[in-house]
Image: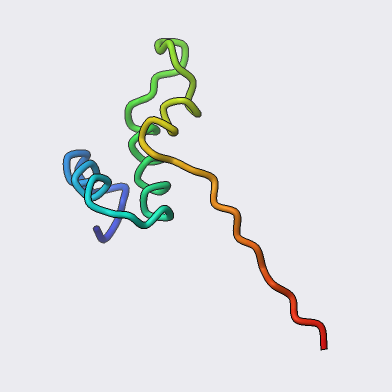
Length: 67
């Protein structure tokens, strides 16, 4: 997957099904939702569709070392 914008929808779905990396899942879920979701034409929100594709918020905590 060189460029997510030019990767086919079918290939993105295949990658989504095979990966366990949440960062990759989030990127693909966002791209698929942008391609599919239509404002004011859907019964679900953008965020709801993101969640259906597996999007999850990642909390990156930075441990600070005090010297």
